[in-house]
Length: 237
Image (cartoon, rainbow, N blue to C red):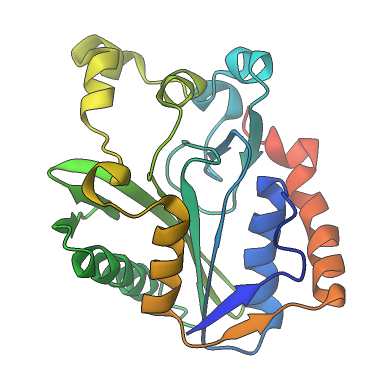
């Protein structure tokens, strides 16, 4: 599997760029399996079938400078920031179930080689000690499948709790404190720093690198505009 690199990967880009990058790789690169990691400023990303106003605390996000994006995969709403890492797996496999399982097996391999006992669930989450450390979503498009996921190395827990609107039933039955108790952080299970963890993931999963060119970056930036379109973001709201 090749690692996909950017010519200017020290530059911070918005979450929308990386969603477009996944799609560009899937549609235009003739490669069987590809992988890359990315980090973003505080952002919320919600699923293709979700309502922005129902799933996201829009007022809180605006007050705290948290950007809001819709992705093309299903699943729930998640929060991301520079303290955790996002994982992108792009494959020519058109069966979404098989793509999901391949991805989950890869992440479990990484964690177990670090001596961390982790398991996957039928909801495509990864748990450590019965607490969620990673969640994934997947979608099929012409040319293959895209799996993207969070890895909670660390995070701003207050933003995570308040940027996403929990269901009334969840609040009534479990309360905010129980939301904390269902999530764990990878930093509590490894001596590796976040950068060291990223290097370990790449070393474990990838053989070689494919560096995107300036033309690729320009195409990604053009595609990115579809993710920034207000009609797309506010769809179903």
